[in-house]
Amino acid sequence: MSCHCDEQKPQELNLIEEFPDKRKKLEEYIQSLDIGNNREKNRGLLIQSLHKAQDIFGYLPLCVQLFVADKLKLHLSEVYGVISFYSYFTDKPVGKYKIHVCTGTACFVKGAGAVLDEFKRYLNLEVGETSADRKFSLNSLRCVGACSLAPVVMVNDKVYGKVTAKMVPDIINECA
Ligand code: FES
Image (tube, rainbow, N blue to C red; front, side):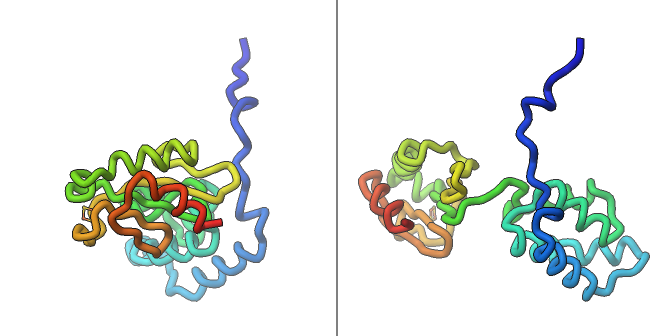
């Protein structure tokens, strides 16, 4: 009996092939670095290369990871290891509006759980998911250092303090 798993999987967009301008930009950046045959040294250039790649493509799917690994002459597993270690990097598409609900202790005590639940309900997303139109991503994080404003929500770089579940629709509408 043959397996049809692949037929059910959505095809991942190959960003490297689909966006030659972006590919060129990343290639030129990596070429401007001091790449040699010393893998140890090249590994030291990995984080900045991934930063650039994520800036350009928005996230780091497998095709971008392979591209970076190839240019730096590293193994894919080394690239993936860095991406999975640093929470800044993501291999999933992210929304134009990145919503982060702080669930650190101070925020949690002041009701961040209810705020997060309301975002989930309103956007019909779970934590870590992005809406189909790539408009919103929903995530939680631990203490953003603004505990006096608890509960805190960040939308991209904008900080909302003393957030209640009732404020959620207004916060989302501000993104429109
Ligand atoms: S716990 Fe949320 S800002 Fe500190």
